[in-house]
Length: 152
Length: 302
Image 1 (cartoon, chains in turn purple, red):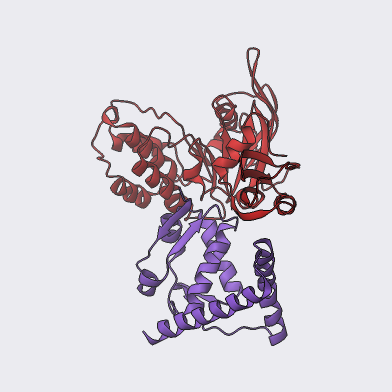
Image 2 (image 1 turned 90 degrees about the vertical axis):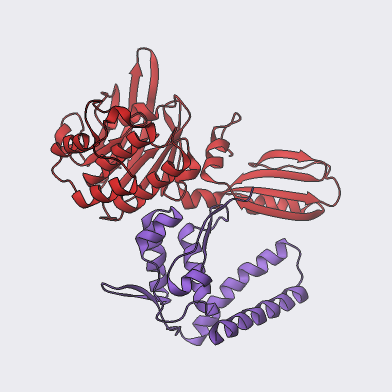
């Protein structure tokens, strides 16, 4: 049996069709970070646009049956990373992506994430050439997906 | 160790029944706004511990404090800030649901009528029904309404969902997350003992596993899931001899091996790679699997 947690499709405009929060307690990744990454990839892929509202904490926590603090922590982290912003009395919204960091810092952040993938590739005996080819392929797939989302 | 902000503080608790040590040197701590899982097999000492917290039992030894107070000496002060939903809920059979909730409310300084109305609706409870006619699920729902409407700082749940149908169990957990936790998340503390660990998985911030009246493991849920992993590996040829210090081999047949690691995944992966490794997958253990792995004969995974 696969062991993923609940999948939730929320009735919030774009979140309906494009964002499915899916928690997997067996991934080894903290639950709040799974939410963070899913919102980030939805924002990066164009599935949600700047100004789109995020679901409020209570219904999302109830639906996913996770601690309310877990969702609150995810939103705080997203705000910290400037992916979303909180407008008092209105809720959380996706921000236009503009990284506050200098280019070298941004490169370093990406490099850190890539290091994880390199380690994983090493463990799984995927060589450098294959890895680079895969990286290009993933990047193209991402840009395709993004272009399609923006044009819709 | 004593932190002034602790909601629950248990130090070396001992409780004997005759010659039997139900609880034997238990330590436990709970901070406000967090959700604690309390896991143990039948007879491990969970209910006895909870009864000591609620002053339904006097400890034989050790110390228990709730909100920084001794629950025996400050019974009213402690009880006015907590609510308790036991496994088996009993009401006065001649009272209706309405009477019962009013009766509970009469003991409480606070009672949230809006929450009460919303939950009665949501659970489809009939206020005019006699409690003697309620099903087990409905009795638990009434007890949960009574607990949540009082807006306590601490919600103590002892096997709250055992014997309930899946829909009632789901609604129960959603109510704890929504109606209870949401109102004042920084203060709303949950302490839940349960066998149905997987259902509460998303709710649990931290858990304690007890066995023979002692805590054997206390960890945050995220840390636990990161540490405890199951590795499944397949070799191209059957390996001669495999040595895994600290990992428990779940099964090994021919070219395949499955093992559980506790924090030493990298080391074990390196040992595996010494063989002709064909494929390898890892996944975290769920809290329920961690519970089983910890209490299985042979002891905890080192």
